Length: 392
Image (cartoon, rainbow, N blue to C red; front, side, top):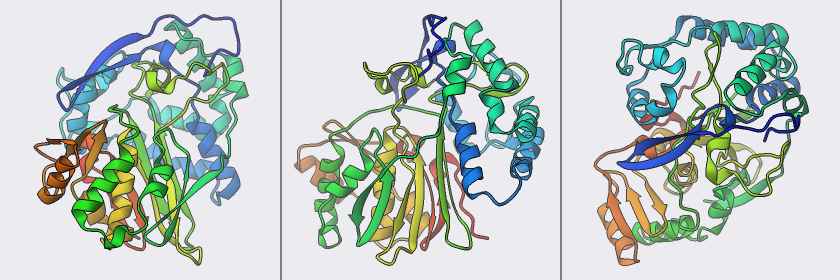
């Protein structure tokens, strides 16, 4: 949360609406929505503690991709339609609708200048976002657009190491941070006899565990899960919120809109405080401490839903990773179950009999999250968002 400099009062944010599943969702973007970024410092700390290659070499492949651009997957193109009101302001129009029409799947997505920004990051290290030239440019850009982000906010940023929670699922140990959705607490609240319950009964038990925290939000959240040949796992989830519609000039970087996510801003949040998050990277180990699953998800309020269903698929139902991630899911909002096309009808009937209103979606949709996971059951990314998995 910015404001430590105390010399600037943030201006109003810019309200926008995006339609998600036919329902309008209100967000706020602009300079006043930009919070202190944590990704550069986080990546730098991971590299400092566990990295083996030189920092410049780690960043090098990203520079190559940024220079050439990447092919936009069809699933991402479908998501672009929903989030266009946030991504098209400022430099976004030339990037996401270069010929006046939104990019389609298979077309080239290119952020001009991003390779230059990453080159600066490679040469100067992560600190350039906080006390170097990128940080200085970010402060000037945000303040020119009505935000309060200042040098003191950037200089004070620190990576925090948090305690993790624990839950038993399918005889395995799940470890995850305590997120705003309560993912690890939801897993811990599931009945111990899930493996012997009928699937309709289990669906009701899972819905009951999920019901306490129903939200429907979009978000530009990304997850990657990696395990090396020695069994070391790394799961990183990052988010822009929905994006501030504010870009670092000539550097291809869209700034975050985390302060425009109203449900994340609590009355006690003061300058320098941490905005809460729904992100929940996790690992699963067996009784010997051997890795079983490393997983995370995009999807804001549906992160918890997607991870719970994927873990049940692998740890309880014995599915391989691609099948567990791709199978139809449901998500609970208050007393309504939103179910993807293909979700078993007998389970939906049990949910209806238990008092839930059931909203049957006509297809699988990016609304239901975007898991990426790797483990003994294989590796997979979520087809809902063009995700991929690979084992080398």
